[in-house]
Length: 314
Image 1 (tube, one colour):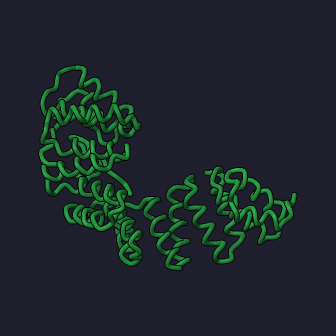
Image 2 (cartoon, helix red, strand yellow):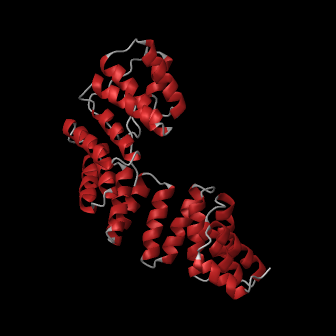
């Protein structure tokens, strides 16, 4: 599940809109433009918004916007206490600021304080009953509290109010997956991919295909994930597993080579590559991989059993 942030004046995601956000005039100084810029890196956002705040040239909604956006930058840097202080100040300056409540709710969610997160999303929705972002984030909180039905209801409302919000489809698809509703999960992940292809969407849909024994489709989705992000181990190791299921041991070995190149601490990739090598007759290579898996997780029974059967081959 993904919880989204919003920015004042220029928002994260073209479809994420807020009622009456503070607007930047063309003549605004560069610090303000960087503070509210869509593509500003978190560190640069924090610095620019700090310049705006310390300059004491802004008041009211615009000052609240600077605090809110600096809070966003601090959240992305995972400086959560400082972010919380800024968002509290934004809300103090503008108590009807739905975006600030949503961003503060996100901070509470990262701090695992889901009750406060939900309370903030509630307030954002009270201020703006069509605020798709807040419904998406509250749905995430309900999921993390284990209430799948409330999560599903909120994510459906997020999609109702913003049918182009790709992340809400992905999040709802994950809830359907948790509810073992494969057909609806696949439909939502497919819509997410159409709206905004990303690694996690392909991985998630691939997982549903895998669990429903549609292995060719699962392998195709994991392959797309690897194509989009070739240095992300997830696509490689998931496709490697499918290839082993299908008896393609050479293909599985090649995928696990890639997976371990990009994530050498994944115990299951070592274990599974060992299985591929064993099937291909490379007993010494298999034993080395099983030993590496056991270095990372000494109680991994599959690796222990395989190594015992090999007699600790060297």
